[in-house]
Amino acid sequence: MFIRFFKTNQPASVFALPLFAAVLWLGTWLNPQAPEQIAAMPLYRGFSFANDFPLLSELFAFALVIFLGLYVNYMINKYDLREGRERSNFLAALFCIFFLSLFPSYRTLLPQHFSAIFLLMATDRVFDSYRKESAFSHCFDAGLFTGIASLFYFPAVVFFFLVWTGFVVLRAFNWREWVISFSGLIIPWLMVMTYYFWFDGLGDFFTVQIASVFSASYFQFTKPEHAVLIFIFLGLFIFPAALNFVKAMSSGKIKTNKFFLLFVWFLFFSLVSGIIFPVESYTHFTLAAIPLGVIFSNWFLTLKKAWIAEALFAVLLGAFIYAEAMGVM
Image 1 (tube, one colour):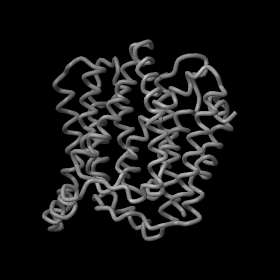
Image 2 (cartoon, one colour):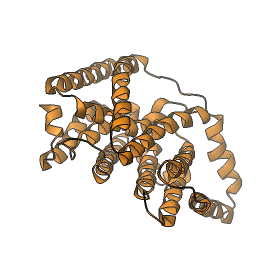
Image 3 (tube, helix red, strand yellow):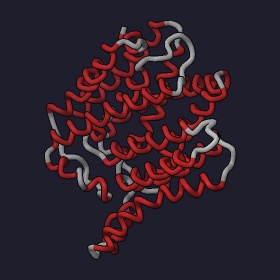
């Protein structure tokens, strides 16, 4: 019944998503904890005050997670990336919210939450440029949103290559579009550096905020008893989900295949950015929740027997609940 409910396009499904997320976040709300110390980039520093109040930080993050889930779902429906009768549904939002809520550290206000919004906006503009004769504004916007995302969370700068990958996949080569997108990327950086230069803080900007990204150690699992079970089940589920996704890419419309391919690249860059830039915790991989949500929702949508989909999702929820209980103990 649960998966079947979100496979419909009923208005009730929209209101059920925050309720579902609230259940996942209940344990965190009952025992709010201060978030991990993060080297705040310029745009994130304006919101980092919320981290002094753990419950406020979690409520703020909760709202952003709901928005991200709905935005991904909006993109899936906007570009008609589903086959079959149930083309409009809320499964993508459901799984994005689930993956964005996996660990307690995901449920505090993170720069990745803001960065993910702008990366989705950039991806949306790249998608919207498909088959447009002139797409200079789309290219500029995609670069601009990526630049803004990197000013919230510096490793997101790697996703600029996702923009160029989108041009390769969706458009004929036009060197002007590549240059325009790069100008969009650097404009917010020039504005921020001008601000710091004006107030004689440019040196501190590079030595404190940027250099700290490169000096961090690679991520460590602070609570392995909480993480291992979920990763085991995810590992078991990712293989059939990925196979189904590859099958969908090879049998669907050309446009759908290309857009799905960009979600695969989104997952690739979310992993690569964590390797290129040392990150202190696995909160970096909140960015991977977006393409994983798309991949899993596509898999569950194609499962012909409803009871199998319900049982698989129940197993995922069971692993989450058990791991949550282990983390609290």
